[in-house]
Length: 421
Image (cartoon, rainbow, N blue to C red; front, side):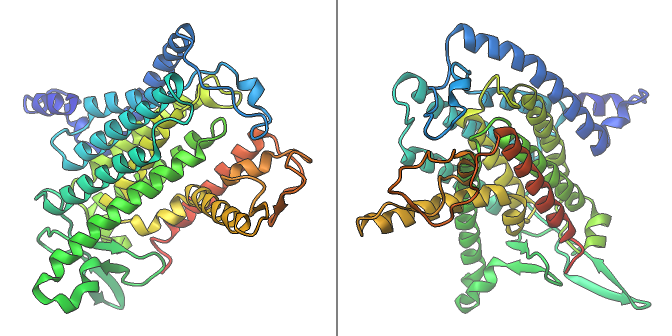
């Protein structure tokens, strides 16, 4: 809104109005504004939730040894993150931009889905809504995002397909006309473009349509996988919020270079016009997450809940898809990926043991962050654990910090892939 106001004022030569045309200015402003909103609104929201006695069920001491200390802590803190993200984005973003609209829609939709789950946990069943409803909501979002990127005339790219040599130096240029494209970037590979439609060369004239259908299916899968991965990572004070702030800062860097034609040419990546608005949105989101950490860092004054974690995963997934960097997600979201894999390994290994009358576990507990806070002798004596490490119980703050460090290293590696091929 303010973007359009100041752009209008710049036509009258008003000093300083032109600053709103700079992405860096608007991005920093959204970061600061979201921090302020998150800090102010967070304090009010925590007091409101405590007055209403709206708190999470006391955690099972057999799973969380610090659960007793967290009795009576309010939940649904994701509302703080969503408000502190959406308000600055509406004020400072270009609302006619298709990518900004997708991000706002993603945030609100998954926030509502998570709110439904959190509210059900507090009022009806501690298990929340049925998993199939969560998956259906995530799949529906992925379907809508995939179809919008396929059908919208504004969702286009300039492919980095022309490479010339001038005086022994490789020079990359982009296609002169924007095109609808299913191309994505393969990490660590020279001339690293992969076109989904190339998997259907045998379909002849129908290969492009088939490629887009595959793109939509991949989008649905990625939205579901990353959203659930973020949800699983939300199990310790500050864990998911800290990891997500690092991840979104990384995606902001990738979105910025993808939206700058000279940087995109230098890095030999696709130029995605309009994706600069993702930088504005992501900086608002990073500011909201950091502001939320003020209250969510150990010992937490409020929990994020599914209201926040589902929205976080969706924002990360949709951003990566828009800038055609979805194959970098296993690096950028390494912690989310490991959390999901740990649950799959634990579940299937336990089923394998049950069929044989054995109590088998791959880890001491899953998701994997829980395995680091199991006290000696806490597991039943008849459990046979394949990976019985660590032997002791780590402090929750140490586990969280070490997971942040891992995320920083993996995100740095993801950025380095732009040059290492």
